[in-house]
Image 1 (spheres, each protein chain N blue to C red):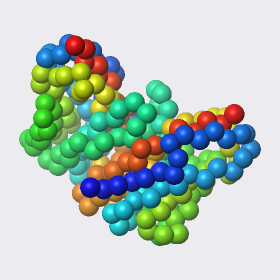
Image 2 (image 1 turned 60 degrees about the vertical axis):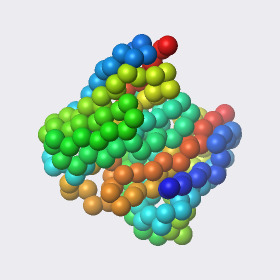
Image 3 (image 1 turned 90 degrees about the horizontal axis):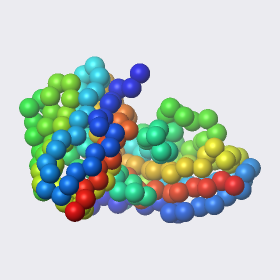
Length: 111
Length: 112
């Protein structure tokens, strides 16, 4: 079974802090994705990566950056957290058939 | 413009009352369509992939079907444990990087 893990289930940070969310997959997948999910807005793509050190912007990249130094690990960085970045953050990796496998999510609260 | 529309937004069923969820899409060429189940506070769980019109996939009380413009998730004799949000996502044939466009989901509640 594919396993995607995320570093934290719940996180509380203060406005202006730099926040790191980490995601690890164990299936040697090349493509990995970061989404945020908000009530009424569904899943929105922030960034994705198709290889080590390669990245593409999604629909809402503003205020975020990513890092992929190793194939199995994809990090999402909030450079200066703001209250409107309070959300559920979901990481996914892509299988051979283009299906995506999701991690359990990180519920981030910025106060 | 949304590429994926799911209906209804919410559905309440009594246990044993069968129904269908709809996913309509407007991608130019379909490579595949995926269905997911999401429980509150958790990540989406992959259910099915459908690749071509006429294809069907089944898993327990769920059956997914695909036409050229829409997909249906049929739920037969549902149980309370089927309560969840169901998401669909088509992938365009031109997508080489595997980006999916998710619908907003149908929130299903099955009461005893």
